[in-house]
Amino acid sequence: MNILVVTQYFWPENFRINDLSRSLLSQGNTVEVLTGQPNYPEGKVFSGYRSYRSNAEIWQGIKIHRVPIVARGNKSGIRLALNYFSFIVTGLLFAPWLLRKTKYDVIFVYAPSPVFQVIPASFLGWLKGVPVVLWVQDLWPQSAEATGYVKSPLLLKLLERFVRFAYSHTDLLLVQSKAFIKPVLKLAPKIPIAYYPNSVEKEFYSPQAIQVPHIQSLQSGFTVLFAGNIGSAQAMETIVAAAERLSAYPEIKIVILGSGSKRAWVERQVVERKLTNLYLEGRFPVETMPLLMRRASALLVTLTNQPIFELTIPSKIQAYLAVGKPIIACLNGEGARLINEAKAGVAAQAENDEALAQAIIGLYQMPESERDQMCVNGRAYFKQHFDEEMLTAELIKHFEAVIEKNKKDNH
Image (cartoon, rainbow, N blue to C red; front, side, top):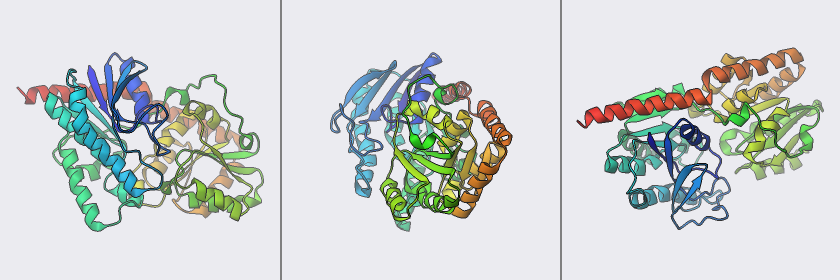
């Protein structure tokens, strides 16, 4: 099968689609990628690339076609909007020419925000007469509202119309959470929808023997590790307030690995509140994360108290389950339900710093044998529900079905 992956984000940016593309390749398919110039998360185009050019390169057997893009910048809503819009425009203008000589069986769109990156893919699908499969990672326009980038009711209504349009020009919609099915169905009543969850790189459940950075804060005590984006959606205020409540427990430390728009704010809070139990250690290469996670006593995932996040399963939950450490989930809805169902940790209400502090204390005081059982439970649940090879085979079946339907419809 010849698969074209369309995604605004791809290697050397760190996204799930990188490993899924490799997994599709390993199962005997040809995989090519249409993407932009890498600039996430720092907002500047990576060294060796240029914003306003198109180019091609090979990465681990995958041919990557890059189109020009406006870098997202730092904390600028206008730059972010231009970043999103530029990929759509350059995808429409450049991709038909860049890919003119290649035939594909299916076009697969990986769609974290924004979902509108499906537009050039749908145009390509129409030109080449092949089906388009869209994997919905974030709900729009709800995501734009929840993150605070769009507040105008009129603009949100307009975005909803665009989402309807985007969905309607696909052949299959895959959603990363079962709770997404209902809201997506509302906007795309005539398009088939199927649940297709995220997995993680094999390094998370089968770690490689590599050199990892020495992080002093992870060397002793009961360490609660938060790994990933330090943004407005991750309820950093709750983590900071919980750390303040935990000051009476000198053995408990909260360690944050990552970067994002709220990092500077958290650094200021550490100084202003004189927190000696909250450590911001910076970003580290993705290949080191599984081993760093294994050095923690527990792993923390947080989201703000927004209706949309009740429907979302943060992809770090799969990573945490695969690593096999007790999970502390300070969020509502599907993410908390999954942790409880897996018996892999404890859940607290979103944005409730007192509940988060109590959950950490409870895990800290829990007999080690009970925490060990949570580790076993998490890995078993991951293997049953999120195993990468299993999910890749499932995705290929989705592709085969939609290709077959497309052939029948066109006869």
